[in-house]
Image (cartoon, rainbow, N blue to C red; front, top):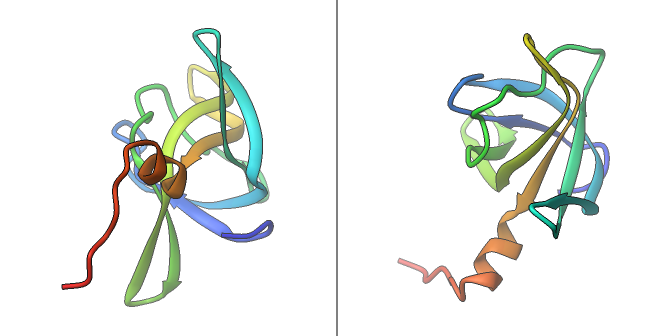
Length: 109
């Protein structure tokens, strides 16, 4: 994933939210319970809602083409959140950070 890519997030409360433009790819940080978390950050392209409370843990995906999806990470934090949802931005932990942190590797089938 790169800066400028468009992603979708599949959160529990928001269901499917697309048109999230990546502005920081792998070099964004935020604090959760006193711990700095590193990941990526996206904003709504042209305004709107990027997430809602309860979406954390949902996948963030990139649509490569109509028949392909790429897992980019897991929703971690929303910004500009109010009763209707988060309108400023969305942070997610990148999938490779998760894989490396838990020593997960994919084996070819």
